[in-house]
Length: 121
Image (cartoon, rainbow, N blue to C red; front, top):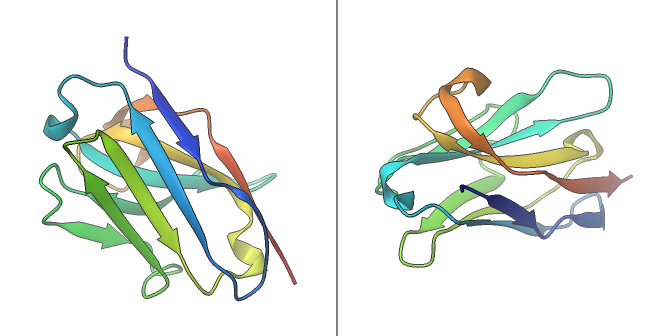
């Protein structure tokens, strides 16, 4: 059974930082591209960042480029998202996902339950 569990969310002031983690119970973790998506109230779930199976390739949404960094540790089956210079518009539930490297939700087979990030102004 595949499980993804996010952690690290919380309340932070604008300009602050948070580091999200995703622990994956996938035997073949290194075979999957991993991504972060987010969903704000009343909005569609949107792509944030993706990392290739090897960690050698990354892509970011324009809205987070230069502020967020995605990384993975295949030895520990973990995924991270370092978020700096946070803005109120970054407030959302953040989800990790495992699947094919892409920016669309349908490319991903497995999803975590999400972790809330709230940025106050």
